[in-house]
Image 1 (cartoon, each protein chain N blue to C red):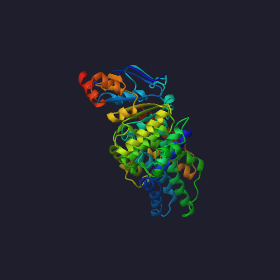
Image 2 (image 1 turned 180 degrees about the vertical axis):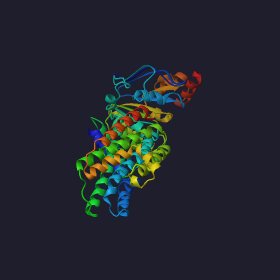
Image 3 (image 1 turned 120 degrees about the vertical axis):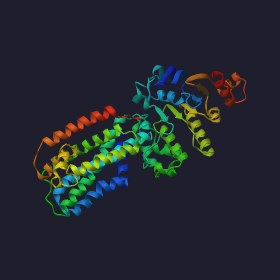
Image 4 (image 1 turned 45 degrees about the vertical axis):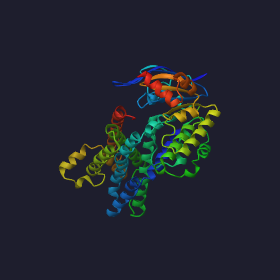
Length: 237
Length: 229
């Protein structure tokens, strides 16, 4: 079964064409990577997936629903971590988790999510007093507190130190083991290689290749995903 | 409902943690009352001032910062509707203003031995309309001014002259004629009148109707102009 189907998605802002015919599918339970240069259309694609933006043309289906029309119903089944979003400075970690938990009809126990993500020692700390890595970890935990079927993570480990990154990878692995569908937007090749079953390469608003990391490497005759990416991106230019 | 309660409770907690809000909505009116030697005639105006400080002094900057720091955007990805967030802000502002107001009224009566308000129900209704009205104006400011610093500044620039010219901070009869005329057209003036009437026990419907009209107009303007990002 397909958890996400994006067909010929197009979106422009004024004269700027952000997404120019993006097509891909994500199977239920799959961890799917989206990789691409800055301005390739990754964030716009993600925002159309979660219903924050309405596509100009093409179709988007998440769990069989159109996110632009059924945003609120779909939001109960969706967990989202956005690039550089934040919380009120004075809200405490435990309060944020409890509040977000109250938004969802079928939420996970927020205390367990807090425990799981190692946030318990920070429970009474204000968001504004957290380090960059701690904020990131909280935003990730908030993406999961609704016990989602599909999780969309934009720039998952940006700002995390190497230990926190590995720890985050392990937790994403747990999600995968639990059958959650994960869409991971990243420009870290090691992360995509370690976590994703398949990856879509975006360049200038279009998908230039989709496949497993191994397939992309084999198709381009290169030695690593990073080199494969550079070859694909260059060939499209 | 559970989502809304959680959101409103969180916003109220955040307000209570903000030293500026706490000072201006609770301590400052009490200080003024002491300076006035507990003159209960000034109290209805102070109630309007408390509401105005929250709705126009604090709310625009708060909403603009939520927008600028993508708090609104993050909330828009959850099942709550963004309108619910504005509702929660409104409830939190009213609750904080009410706390400051009740304390002020209780001190006026118990410490300074003033007569209790003539019509408590009407006073509560006037305070509620006044609070919603100033929040609606704060919402318009946050809709028109896009960045955080600009929105707080404009909020202050609108709020301060208004509390002095509308009779909230000082009685209007103490003002020179030309300034009094400006006060005639300010939206906070009917709020001070409505609160004053209720305090003295006279039921006058007209100021309440004007407040309701301003609420409808400002909410419509705010809703048309407000941008989530």
